[in-house]
Each structure stands twice: as C-alpha cells, then as structure tokens.
Image 1: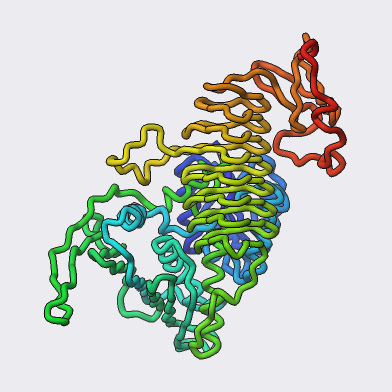
Image 2: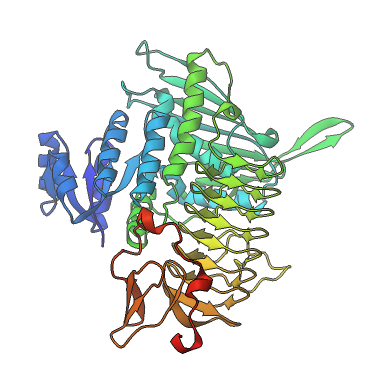
Length: 549
C-alpha cells in the first residue's frame, strides 16, 4: 500500500491522521506545534513525527502528501510537494488565488503527479445517491437549488465564511447542474471582524434558467447542513445533521394549473435507504486507490479550479456591494470554431483546438494542445489527456479515458455497454475503456468497451479490438490479433534471439521479456527528447520487406 504523510494536525488534520492510520497508510505526521506532535506520538506510537516539512519531502517511501494546513498555506505546501515528485491531496480550497490554483494544476500535469482536493461531500453516500437520482431524470428538469451551511463557532481570521464553508456547496451545485453559472452575485455581513465576512449569501444563475443560492455563516444559533433540490417532477432534501435513515428524502410534490392558477399538491416524504459510511474514510480510501492505479481523483485539481473560479466571482461581487459578476468575461485560452458546441462546465486545456461541428459535453476534461477534427463528440465525464489528436467523425463515449499523446483515426468507434438494449436503461453502468499513453487507433477501428489498449500500441485500420492489448503491440484483423511489435515511432519490430529490437528511425532499443516490451533508453511514462519528436524518415523508406518481417 502507498504511504502518505499528513501535514497539519489542527481541527480537520486530526481526522485525516485518524483515517489514514486506520487504513494502514500513514507513515509520517508533520506539524510545527510540538504539543500536537506529542499527542500524535502518544496515540500512534509507530507513526513518525517531525516539525520539518523537508523531512517529508526527502522521504522516498512517502508517495502522497496530505495537506491540512490553514488555507493561506495550501499553495506553497502543495507546490513544493509536486515539485519534489509527490502526489498531493489538499484540503479545500485548493488555493486562495486562481493563478495559484492554475499553477498547481499545470505543475501536477507536467510532473505527471496526482492532485486531489478535499471536497468531502462528493464521497458522502447521500450525495452520491442524490447525484444518481438527478442524473436518472427521476426528478425531471432542475429548477432551483439552495444550500445552507450554518453553525456557531470555528471563526476564521485568514478567510471569510464564503471561502471557509461555501466550497463544499459550490462543488455540489456544479455537480448536480453539470454546468458553470453564467452569473454570480454575493453579499455578506462583517460582524466580528472589520474585513472578514461572517455571513454570506451567494446567488448563482445557471444556463437554462436554473437558479441556486448558498447561505453560509459561523454565527448561527444551531447547526444546519441542508441541500434542497427543486425540480419539475419532485423535490429532494439532503440534510446531513439527520440520522442516516432520514438524511436523504424525496418529496414527489407537484404543481398543477387550475383556471390559470398554480395549485401545489403535496406528498409525503420518501426517505432513501443509504449505506452508512464515513465520507472522510471513503475520501481517504479513494486517494489511496488513485495512488495505486494512477487514476484521476473524482475531485481532482480541475474540480478544485472550477470551484475557485466561482469563489473568486462571488468574492468580487461581495467586495463590489453585490454587483453580479459574469463567468463569460473570463479569458478562454483554447480555440473552438463558431460551429462547435462546448457545454459548461467542462475543462479544456490551453492550446486545444475544436473544429467544425464538434461537441464537447458537460463534465468532459480535455488536456492541453489537443486537436478535435470535424464532427467529433466528447461525451459527459470523458477524460482526454494532453496532445491527443482526434480525427473526423469520432465519438468518445462516457466511461472512456484517453491518456496523453494518443491518436484516434477517422471514424474510430468506441462503445460503453457490452450488451446494449434499447428498452434496458444502463445509464450509469458504463464500462471503462482505457487508451494508454501514446497509442494509435486506425481509421474505422472498433474498440469494444471494458478493455485497455496498452502504451504505444498500434491498432490497424478496420480492426475490432475485443480484449486487452499489450504495450507496443501491432493489432490487425477481426477480431484483432497481434502480428508484431511497434516502436514509439510506429515502426514494426521483431525480437532477435536475445529479445532485443531496434527502431529503424530513432535507433532506440527495445527488449521483449516475459511477453512485455520495454524501451531500454526511455521510460514508458517519459516524454521523447525534443530531437526525436520530429520524424526524420518516411514509413515508406523504412518499410520492411517480407524477408525481414
């Protein structure tokens, strides 16, 4: 199991220490407060403690750094950990400045490290179930959402109640609407401190007329954590302070028009049965799983950045006496042709180009410097890495993850359900398809869902791939079979008696051992040297003869 260090043992850091220790992953706790370290040493004798952050960064056995410092320190601690090659979990908010958050996201990408943000409620069984209910269409079209996060105490001095409490609620509203707000306005009251708002109300106007508001305060006579969803076919209430059997309730209320007058029809609450599980334990376990399988966290850096964008608009509105702030005024650093359609919220990296009649759906995540040809469709929640080239007429469906430097040829076909039936609804049961780094999929090839195409594999045009493909394999036919190995430059290779192979264009050496191919000089996750990134000879000039294949 991967090992982690927790940085900060304050109110929330103690909970992280407890959970990671229970999961058997906690190696070190770091805090400048020696009394706090003494308490950790007493409670967990086998856990190392240190006041020096450098001790954590120097420890090669520590893979993940869990940051629970005050919010003003999140950026500096996360940046240093990423620069030292650690995977990072940061408590919300990701940072207090958008440019700092953007730098962390870019740094994680460039270092090939994981960056996760502690938006806890995404791991709460009640909210997970609520998202499923909304996505299924059971409640109909969303109309209005509001969230209250109220209590007495935990007053902060370095951040106001908006930044301390509202990230959770913003994240939930973005997840349920699957959109970024078009306009944000906020107002508040500075009661205890002249420059820190103790109470804030934030209003969000989403596309399609959906409205939301978030009320947060640490000056409230009682604790209330409540999210209300109002939709055309019913309503839902997630109230976290209730017992487990009453945390999530559905109200099939309706409104009918009689003689031009709206008449509400009330129905009894229907409480949803939930699995009882500590959300923080699930969140910590999710981070550890991501460390093991290198999958992107549900609440990754991009999710943290989206929440931060809304927070910044709300803060500007707060400072400008509730003047609405527009999301559309933000700078866009990618190109989309005027006929292309990009639904929000989604994440598109700088330098990416989206051409004629293509469609990027809500929740999709595209890296930097990608190219989407004409009539390309990227479905909800698809993850596309950096420098991915997608040719014309390709639809990439939900459940697909495409890593960096992948080439998808014209009209390549993906699926996400093995046994589709029109009358059987399997939405939410999509099977995962993974296209690993550097792979190429030829024109009209079909990739059956639920499989993995290995690093730098090459699937020939028209092939039908129905089982996992090894790294560097050349696959042809129906069903596809391996006929050779290929180099990172895309040339056929056959091993000699010692299992060695050579790329005729780059000169790189590859070795076949126990059925797996690896490049001798360059790691599979490493980028090619700049001098090798430009082709030096055409395939035709290097095409192997029958005698050499």
